Length: 103
Image (cartoon, rainbow, N blue to C red; front, top):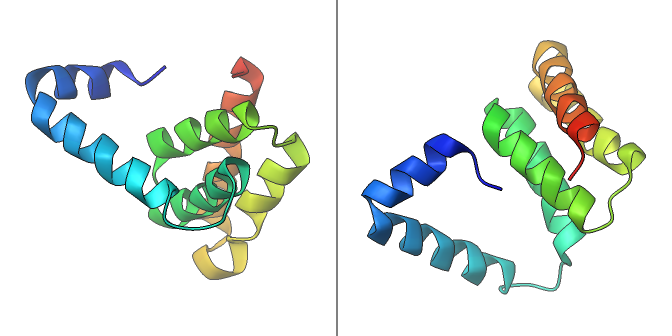
């Protein structure tokens, strides 16, 4: 389920929500990576961007597509040398909060 803020935004601006979904679908279909791998990559991107809400979303998606806790943790940890320890620890916390909630 998408966060309430996102749902409120796309309720007010449905054309933007549709455009966002179309781009997301096109990107997903643009290459050979499976859904789990894409979600794990997006977790790493979220670490770099400090994107808490997106991190939680991609953790849910990764779990939905069969990612293990160890795989999610590694996706977060891989960002440490590039993004720094504080950002990695914050992202690790967000990931584990989402893992505790389940899919």
